[in-house]
Amino acid sequence: MPACHFAIAFESVGWTHPDSVAFVVLQSLLGNYNRSDGSAQWSNMRLPRSMAVHADHCLSFSSFNTTYTDTGLFGVYCLAKPPFIHDAVTNITTELVRNVFKIEEAALERAKAKAKMNVLATLDGTQAIADEIGRQLHVYGRRMPMTELFARVDEITTSSMKDIAEQYIYDREIAVAAMGPVWALPEYQWMRRRTYWNSY
Image (cartoon, rainbow, N blue to C red; front, side):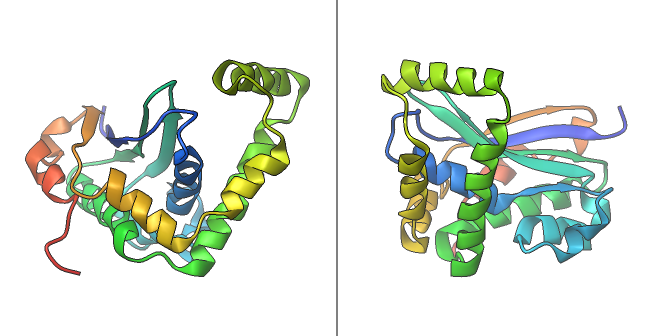
């Protein structure tokens, strides 16, 4: 296996937590990247653009937000080859922590619009809609109207998003899983140190 598959994740929140919607938006804010997509260097999202400018650093990455009943995992899954794995990890951790200090209003509005679009895109058939109804009944005890979900997305501001990033990402423990040439992956303590900045 020539490339290293790795994921860096933080503990997030469960389905019914008030901050759960913010993580959906934060996932959209980080975005996704695939080196075969030549348009990534003109992306309006910082992390895909950073990876595209240094195309050797990363083959692909995707942000993820996995939610359970009372907890969750939020992070980034990445595919990179030695000796550029170190650079890919640096880009990812830098952008994650950057959300604590600076989020552009325009970038947040695009992320909120993309989050809404992603929600609608998952409901493209009767089976997907039935799955969504079943999940919501199990989690919330009712069917949440789309207007209510979108209203909760619209309530998110740059200030509240930075508060979320500070509470759940800044100087917090991380979970790391990897396979492939893991010898090129930075050690855990090195990555943990990148979850905070001494200055900004």
